[in-house]
Amino acid sequence: MNELLNLGMHPFASEAMKKGVDAQRPLCKSLASVEPDYIRVPDEHEFFLIGVAHHLAEVLNCCQQLAHIPIFLTNYAETRKMVRAGITRHSAIVYHIENYIIRTQSLLDRILKLVDAVFHLTNDPRNCRFDVIIHNVKVQVSDLPDSIKAFRKLLGRYSHIRNEVTHEHSLKDDELRGLDLLYLVERWERISPKKSASNVRDEINERILEILLKKKKEFLAFNKEIASSVTEIFDKLTPYYAREEQSLRLRLSKSEK
Image (tube, one colour):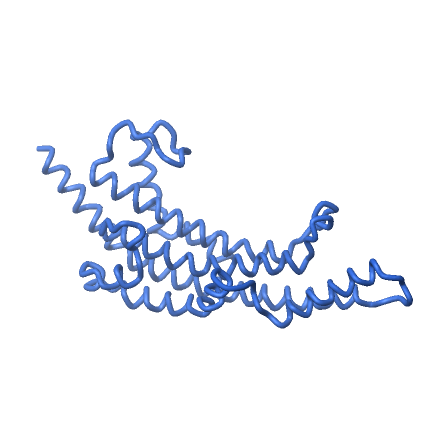
């Protein structure tokens, strides 16, 4: 069972997505449009429902990607075109590991935007930073801060690597460096005169298997921790979502009278 993929079935997620879609459907010509062409400007209640659903979808999409990466990591089909382009199993492994690490940090940003939407803070997306959200009065008096802080601490396990990969250099890992060197040896043997049979291919396959088993186990375990932490946040967001939604609905109904 993949806990990250099951987050979409959480009661908060199910309700918020349904209400968001129901609110947007009569307002635009197509729900498939990236930038909806609204027939009219959404009222504040509709704006709230659509905004929460949008940011929730972004959280769930990131969780889905994190759940898929261990599968991508261990499934590789080499083609002639890939060989001609110099793509090896090593480069594919590095690509997916870096992708995973970067997306773990993206998830915190998306959770913060979701909290902003649920509490109807209406911050500019560029200002939905940890300190801004966590120190907002509406959030401070709730039971969310401890869960968000714990989530940030959990994701911090990869934050320094993410910063290095994003801003400084490619992933630094002794096992991956060793695999890359084995591929260099294999390429050299392919273009140089063959003096004797080599077992470098066997060494490559053995090293790949070791790396894949280790990384898959690591990422699957971390995904479970992420799912548990996000579930806790969803649980705590549920009553605040219901309260804000009801408050906006009542305010709208009074203004229409």
